[in-house]
Image (cartoon, rainbow, N blue to C red; front, side, top):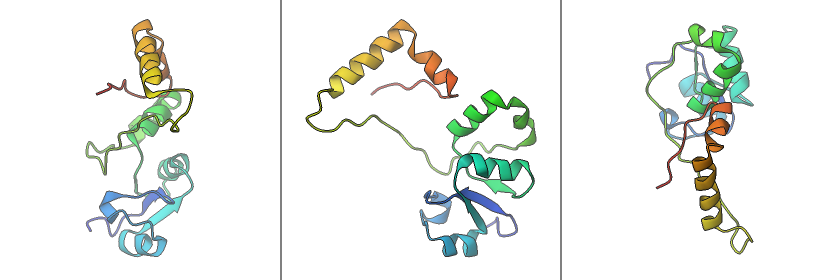
Length: 131
């Protein structure tokens, strides 16, 4: 790979597309010089302190971090390419008193009332659109 001379940082247990989704620590260290941390927060801290060259972080985590530490944005080069894209959803246990329809109606109501957007903004998230 083109990053052999770079110190890469990732989160222990995360699956990265660039590494064929392997979580084997020896493989990642040998082939990608990947140091694994316990969190995205620690990964970013290592980059900001000059202890690594490249970290793989979620866009959502970066946005959230920049809400409280906007000065860090100018210290980083942020790629516009994604390693992978996740589409998270809400899960409900089968036969639970809450139904999918109820949760969807609640989210739609919160969105119409304008109470959902402040939650997304508080955590640096983008508004989702249900399909």
